Image 1 (cartoon, rainbow, N blue to C red):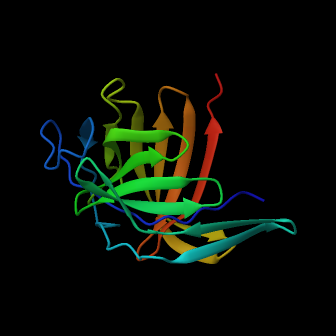
Image 2 (cartoon, rainbow, N blue to C red):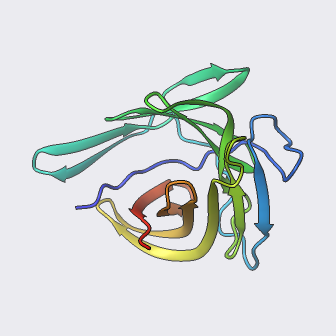
Length: 187
């Protein structure tokens, strides 16, 4: 069975070239997208706990937004999983990943969602050393089946240009990320 993670779309403001918020790392909006707005930034749920029973011996637990960490004057949300603590920031314009307790913390966050989410929207983000490390593309609405049931969700694909890893994430409005898959690119 595939591991299913549930995360909440959190956000921190940024714009191309001159970030509205100094928290955002390098970011470049390649295409606005078109059609209906499929997903907007939402206020994160605090303290929600999700348990995933992978098999008869394995359970994964995730606690969303378990407190905050002050990181250079930025309040980062902590998402606690069985394996690590993930740090994210939020606002109305974008979701940012700041790192984990095992990976370390970035000075500036990587833009993982650029709001408003519309089909065809594309952007790159990364670190000062690799400004376009990740390329994101909003595929559009899909129904996704998870162990927690079916969700009307929005699929966002990500290419890691440094490690050649493709991943897809499905975000359900009002819930957050409900499914994620990743695989190494083959030549």
